[in-house]
Image (cartoon, rainbow, N blue to C red):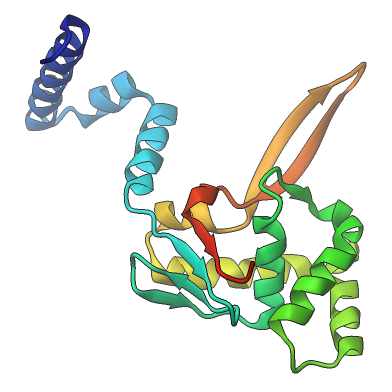
Length: 193
């Protein structure tokens, strides 16, 4: 049985649905958008995408599968290494601080490219962690391109490595420009561990 509060919320939702239909029928989507507001509309679109997110399975041989979509995310070993690094750090990483993650990134790259020469891996990681080199941006762009070809833009926004800015105030204002993967980690199944 529904509580009184729940019944009231259900009634409000029905009333909102009816009012929305009336505004749409009258051709007044502008008023509907004004009432809802763009930030809330964006949140609602993201919430709708969340309901269709797939589990990301990383197999023992480092293949990436979107299990619920039945699709493989086909990436080169270097892209997989970058992705694994950001998955391992849900708090985010600033690109300019990547050098602090050199050893971890090298380890992921060696695991995903077992056939590759260690010296080439180390050299490649050097480019990725160099703040004056564009290599990390190129790798993240490639990852984004592959993911957006497999799903809609809002679902993809959870899987890609994207920007998140944190504002800090401690005597002065400064910003942390973190890169993160916002996919809920309960949807990540890592069979390599």
